[in-house]
Every structure is written in structure tokens, then in C-alpha cells.
Image (cartoon, rainbow, N blue to C red; front, side, top):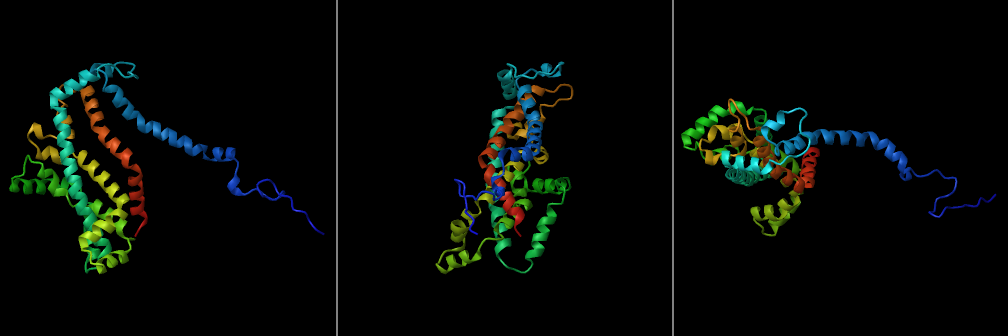
Length: 298
């Protein structure tokens, strides 16, 4: 007995169950609704402190202690900005932080990239032990290193200098580990082929290796810049001159024994956060790709 096949306009036979890929849109929304609700609530909770910082930076300090609290921006932004500039020289402080963070990021990233590449691609005796030592240094609290590092900087005559903020931490253990994980799956045959063609080690590294590792490098740059930008304890110990202060140290001087300029602190914190916010927005895709790539390899 011959059975006639009747198909729909899209080519599916009548009576055949629908493909799971064609799941109704309403069902997808219902299934994903709890996830969306949790994400929305988490986003709102994460934004509340930032929104309050924006609102507080546009009011007088006395307005921040009234009941109810102000929920809308005020009109004291420019007055607070002028007072901030007058009290700590905020423009110079921002330039100091940018200088120190950029220089540190460039040289620390170079050290991390080269060390990570060497640990991932070269085979030599003691490589595993060296990697273990590097990872162990990540477990040492910063407070344990303050006294010996201070003595070293004092012996070198680097107290109240920017090199004291940059040089001791150029070899970043997390950065080295991140780049090592990123280079683990790099095909060494490309390097060997470039050597046969007469390319030097540095040329092969620059032309072949670095372009492939751009996501990991972007993640490394963002992490390194943010860590140096937010550094507080070490610059507080090293810097004595007010014209050399970085942003966290300068903002700390606004906290007095009897009076605290909260509106100025909020404005300074807001302006200090904006460069990091913009940096992450620009490189967020590379940052996430670099961290995920380093997490699943090796």
C-alpha cells in the first residue's frame, strides 16, 4: 500500500514531531525568565553604590546626612570639583597615577609575556619547579613583604620616587601564570618554521606569537593597570612629597581626625573610577576571552 507523503511549506512531513530547535519562543522565555531576573537584580545591586557615589558627588557634605537621603543629583558638582583641586591638586594627582600605572603596565606586561612564553614553549630542567615557586609567591601576603622591601628601597635611595613603586613588582606572578596558560597550546611548529626561514627569536616572537596571544595580552594589560592604579599601601609608605602622590594616597589625606569631606571624597572616587570603567568597556571582550582561554588550557 502506497502512502502519500504530504509536506509543509518548509519541507517537514505532516505528522512528524517538531524539531527541538524550533521550540516555541514563549517556552524559551519562561525557562530563561528566572535567569534574567537574577541577572537584573544582581546588576541593580552592583550599580547602587556607583549611583550613590554619583549623587553624593553633586551635593554638600551636610546634605548627605539628612533624612531622607537625596535621591537625585544636586548642584554642587563644580564647587566640589574646585575644592577637590584646591585641597589635593587633583589634576596633578591624576597625572601621577596615569604615569606610574602606564609605565608599570608596559614593563610588567613585557616581563610577564616573555616569562610566560618561555615557561610554556621551552623545555629545560627545573621548569616545573620554577613554575611552582612562582605560584607559591602568589600566596605570600603583601604585608609580609613591606618591611624587607622598604629596607631595600631605603638602601637604594629610592624613597619618595616613582621607581620604588614600579621596579619591585615588575615580575607579576599572576601575569606570568596567565600568559603561560595562554601560550600552552601555541603550535611550536610555526616557531620552528620561522627559524628555518632565518627569522631571529625576537622577530618570530613579535611577528608570530604576539598576534595570536592578543586576548590574553589584553586581559593582562587590564589587570595590571587596575592593580597598579588601585595600589594604596605601598605608595603610602614610599611617597612623602604631596606633588608625587597617586590618587588613592591623595584621597586618603582628605580624611581628617575631626572632619571628613565626604562629597569631595565621593567626587574624587568617581573621577578616579571613570578611567578604569572606560578601559574595561573598550577591552571587555578581549578581557573575558583572555581569562577564559587561560582557564581552560593546560
